[in-house]
Image 1 (cartoon, one colour):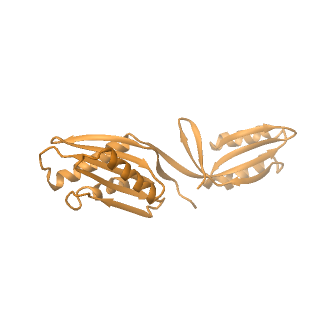
Image 2 (cartoon, rainbow, N blue to C red):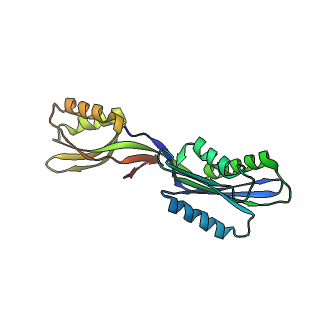
Length: 218
């Protein structure tokens, strides 16, 4: 059974100031190491005069690929704390770059860890993060006597009707959470006395954003 997971849909930025040092977080969605490298390079060019551009990224639903870099800061004070925030928030397919402009005062090991962690948290707060859930898209065909029963069943279970067409038969595309597929099909069969014909069209992930259903083929 596939699992739901959180993913960055739209990136964001964040900024904190600690003892006159500025920490600028850039958070972007990425699907590969090459995309992460491009985000890092773009940020380095944008903030070419900064003292440090520290990085962390996690790619894959199970964090199959994780990397981090302190970029000249004392070992373990920047990249790893940034990565720990990403892993702790359980977001996937994400790249974080925190740019530091040194303010003249040393922060110490603990101060750096806290500053880089907070910067990533601020950046994540500015992002759009979706919960992507495994679903099954089902084509349901029935006569006009059965459509009301199917719509009632869908409403009772809280599943989404993507579209419906009316010809000599009524055809609906219905998105069902993967774990509810068997129950939904059973209820439709019972409600229509077996007259409804159902066909599996696909197995997309889906998410809700501003009351809109978004589908993702993976």
